[in-house]
Image 1: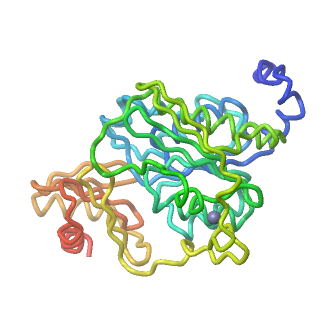
Image 2 (image 1 turned 90 degrees about the vertical axis):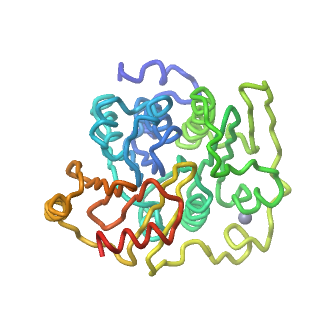
Length: 338
Ligand SMILES: [Zn+2]
């Protein structure tokens, strides 16, 4: 195992830990900056299976910090999950990589979590994090929260039965929740948060649970601040996710058409009530006939309407760019897709 020799020589991991990594399955939710970085480190370290789910595609503004992607991916509007799978396959051909171009909704995540050993949070929103939180506690697998904005970042490891969950944390620790303002972000804080998340994952997967942080950590690389907060006492017995009688409220199925404003992007995601099976080629021909400029790849179709750009995926999910108005996005969606 020359490939992993330096990691095996690291005493807490050793041959035994390396074997455990090879047998592990990590679910990475979100393949943006944090997800990219964690996926690359876990892939290189020899985690046997990685499942990556992401709803977005690569854009030029991602290249400054989303390390799995190159200019070609942005030019081709390649979905992040698919581009990540392609790049990870070049990095380590010996591991199993499963990519899912789609939304991390409750139903999907519940299924994926049932097969995983650990979840890494690479999302940029609390709505998805609450779903991850419920999935992890329901299936009794650890998940590692991470977030960053500007030069500030935070990480927290949750082990069901041992650590208070995200709801308990948010009630007691003043977590700086990202806003939809475009605050910007520098690449080193991404690496710092991903480093914490990945180190924690390596500890848990190699049977070194005692080495896990057990604390909420935050850091600001620009202002040189590092804070650790003990979380032992924040557990809420009544918590609906980690309390005495959990109901996992965020796993309830959503059956209506749903619109979501994406953070700092002037983009609205529209998701149909039930997944569709669109023929994107037929749609492309129709859109061209109607005078719209189109582009795309096997995963998606991009339609320029002048004021907006709509990017449609096979399952009927669409990203409407150029607006943050959910009603307007829905109307446009209905007129183009139905
Ligand atoms: Zn809780």
